[in-house]
Picture 1 (tube, rainbow, N blue to C red):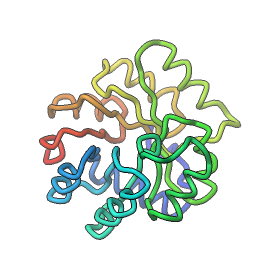
Picture 2: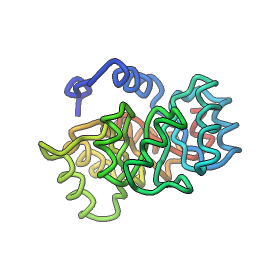
Picture 3: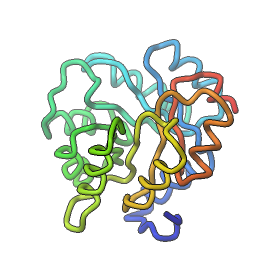
Picture 4: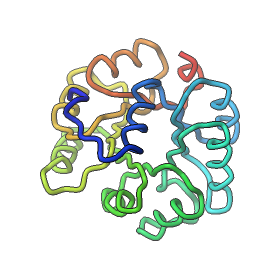
Length: 202
């Protein structure tokens, strides 16, 4: 989907989109070692895939102090439930820029309180594509991005996801080579996310 078909909701969202366009490799971090390493790279946006209610605030602060945008995978944070109160916690007690989740029910509230949103899908079979298409229907609250995993699916699948999504797409997971990065970007993904530290430096 051409980027000029996306409607930027506000200045903050436009800045977020531009950050990803400028540096389309997103560092996904799963431990403190990954946190320290990503701060030595040029990545602008970081997906935080670890932590708990006691540590997530300090993780986000480290990223913000280094000028990075911090997106927290709320489903993976220990001590949080899949309810709106958990989204409020991320907003009010960590100052994260947004959330990542597999729970579409959390998207509307996150957007209402000014968080960026990434809705994650696992593309394991054709039903996943059906679910993405259902989620893209008019009247359904849209995330800012959808992320599909694994990101190394066939080009035809990436193109299909891009064609049915009403928002930009991110390819995530199992991407380890420049060829895989370019496959995703050339076939419609706006960015890729990966825990592979070598890819962060490409």
